[in-house]
Image (cartoon, helix red, strand yellow):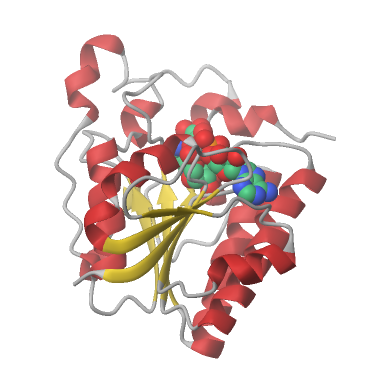
Length: 265
Ligand code: NAI
Ligand code: 15L
């Protein structure tokens, strides 16, 4: 199966660039959007740059779209107002426009920071109560609740991917647990897009790392099987298995440095 037109938001960002390369086989036309310039449209691409917070532009952006990979927005802790614009108002604009355009499915880049205030000694699944670690995490909680509402009200399916840390390689000891390789990200997004029935699903996005805080059994219907593991980078962070509780909240909360970054006023 292939989509006619797939929209990728955040196409100029770290993960957007990865998916721009890899989403081509899934669609006849890949529509790219971002606030920043994403360069000219290549083969099978369309470029329509706009601000997620601009409702009129978003109505245009979603026209003719079958499914959405929503990777745009503020991706780190920030002051409330910019987060509200991009990630809260932006999410509302996206789903209102998606509903009007008859979009069937959205893959939403949520974040582990929706549950960042759990302890690193806990193991949680998709039904654990939300415990955001800042305004950014709160905005992801809003996106998860909003997408739940649009499924219950209008039947738009969404897979909320609570991405751990998706970078070429783990950057610190915490990321040995949270790392999601680009190949596994691609496979997870593919599963989220093409699994027959997803309703409203929450899945944690990590590779098959030796340590994990997250139990994905409730997302088994996606059929996602990670192939990579942070194990290959063990030499970079040899003391990962026994990270001492040194009294630093960035060590004992899952959200790591995001817990200590905020609140920002
Ligand atoms: P990024 O910051 O590199 O990319 C986000 C893109 O969104 C940027 O190109 C930015 O210009 C665009 N953007 C920001 N505000 C916008 C607005 N108002 N209107 C339109 N576009 C706007 O972030 P990255 O790492 O690529 O993450 C992509 C998504 O995945 C984000 O939603 C982020 O929260 C989420 N995520 C990423 C993780 C990671 O490890 N990379 C971990 C957890 C979640
Ligand atoms: C996120 O949500 C961020 O978008 C990303 O930049 C990483 O810092 C990641 O979480 C993380 O928790 O490592």
